[in-house]
Image 1 (cartoon, one colour):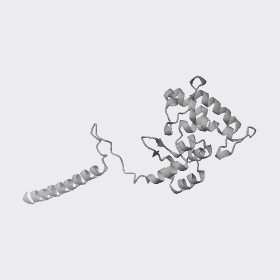
Image 2 (cartoon, helix red, strand yellow):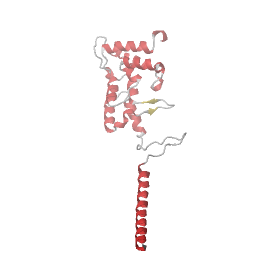
Image 3 (spheres, rainbow, N blue to C red):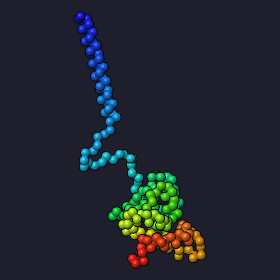
Image 4 (cartoon, rainbow, N blue to C red):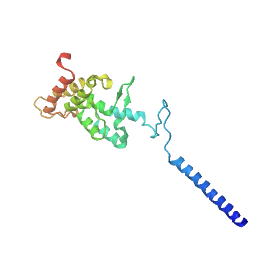
Length: 205
C-alpha cells in the first residue's frame, strides 16, 4: 500500500505542477491579447502616435502656391502627398487649404488638380467650379451653410463672383477663356449667374 501511496503523491505533484504552468501561461496569453480597458468617463481619448506633423513652413508654402502656382503645387505634392489637405492659420483662426486659396482666387485648374488628388471638396470650391448641384444639396440639408464665411472671412456669395469676373478678362466672343488659368466656358458662366442668385439674391445685394 505504501509504494502506491508514494506513486500517487508523485503523480499529484506532477499534475499539479503542469496545471500551474498551464494556468500561468494562459494568464499571460490573455493579458497580451485582451483589449485595453476603455477610458473612464470624462477622460481624454487616447490618440495613437501618427508620427511627426508636417513642417509648418512647408504647409504655408503649399497653401500660398494653391492661390496661383499650379506647377509648384504639382511639384510639392509629388514630393509630399500628405500636403493635400494641409491647413495654414493666417492668424486668429483664419484657416485655409490650398484648395481654399484656389477657390477664392478663381483658379479652377488648380482646384481640379487638387480634387483629383484627394483634396476634400467644400462649398467654396464647388461654387467657384460652378457646381450648382452640390451647393443646392448642401443648402437643402443645412441652410446655414450658405452664410458660413470661408478663408479670410470671404462669404460664399463672393466666390462665384470672383470666377465670374473672368468674363471681363477675356473677350466676349471667346468660347473658352484661358486667362490666368481660368478655363471657363460660356455654359459655365451661365451657371455662375444661377449660383450668385442662390447664395446672394438680388434683394440682398
